[in-house]
Length: 309
Image 1 (cartoon, rainbow, N blue to C red):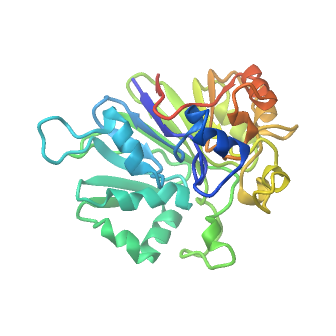
Image 2 (cartoon, one colour):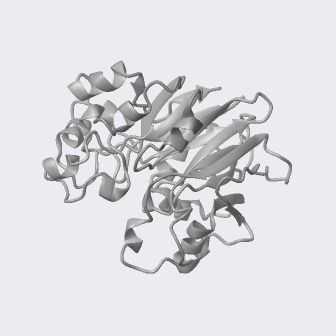
């Protein structure tokens, strides 16, 4: 049985963002504190004892404290149930939390070679000594089974696949450490329980829905999908920035080419948005955007929500 815990559902900066006075952030600080959310990550387990994080957000310390499933085992001075971290991209939202996991508990880090190269090129990540944190490259369209701490199989099969996106923004205009094309910069994951055959999909970033992606997601019991913005020019219209969703590598929720319309009719059992920016009006319960989202069968999760498959 797969157990999934939403550690955080927000995009970079979280909700409220420390320097933002947009309507969502103002409400999250005052009368609607249920809007508060940390930056996007999930934890998944096939046995309820050993857990794997998908991305390590800058809020990972807060998330681990708030999640009893990820606490040290009672009676042990030092222990962590986290057996590994799987990275889907090299953005700060996905990797910065690794620096908060430097206290000596062993785990394995799984990432595409392009992301591992980014970590190697920045010496600050050397605090994760490879004696404790093994780095394992993963490949597009090649399934792997993450190992438990003793080397035995975890019971999960993870299939990484490329989705339309873009590389880390802090590398814009600079040479990537690996050179070459961008294959591997933005990954989706299919996570399968080998015992039951049940699986779900995780896509924290996606610039557009292709026919290939539709064929992958069709019939899935559960999909976590990029919900960064409601409309492509949202940040510009709100006076919060100068970039569109597309220019940042994120599809909008709404519109003829948006996620809601593009993924309609695929017989997906449960559709959950995450990586939701504080500018997104769909975060507000009772808003027209939220009503439209829910009528289309989508859900915005709360931090700590657990789903079993």
